Each structure stands twice: as structure tokens, then as C-alpha cells.
Length: 95
Image 1: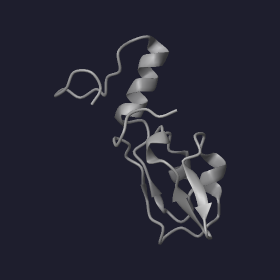
Image 2: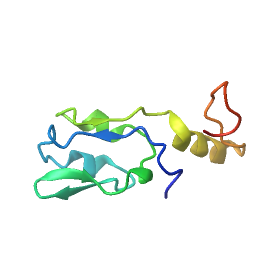
Image 3: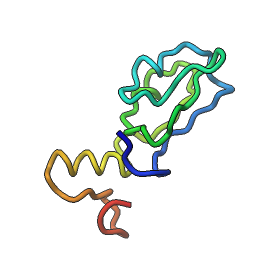
Image 4: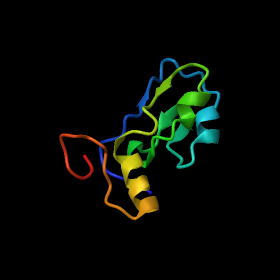
């Protein structure tokens, strides 16, 4: 499931990756795949910013601000039956 295009905070450093495949094992949405001997992002917009990849990457090749951003706001809206809100005082609605 994709949330919103080009808003995810996910960042990946291929140079730090050692190809351990842990990101592939823990990502619930298949954001990563192995290309050659290292991980690569399949589609950044699939990321729900849960933080599992970052928390399990021993090489610190992945950064993501888990629990923030539009993906989290959309999920919270679905769960509570309300309109998505990123919580920003400067905007109404989501991003």
C-alpha cells in the first residue's frame, strides 16, 4: 500500500550497507530488495515509517523518522476514523 508520494523520511546509504538482508526480513511492506550484494530501495513510497529497518540495521545505513510524517497520520486517521493530521500547527489536514 502506498500512502502519499515523496513524503517519507526514509534515507538509505548503499556505501554503509553490508548486505546482511536484515532490512528485507523486518520491513512489513517490502521496501528493500538485494541488488548485487547490497540492499536497495524498491519503492520509497511503500514505507510506512515504522522504523524497523533502522532499528535492525547494524551498519547504520538506514535512517527514518519513525512515527512522524504523512504515512503515520494516514494510519492514525484510519484507526480513529478521523481526517489525517500531521500535527503541524501551520497546516490543516495532512502535509
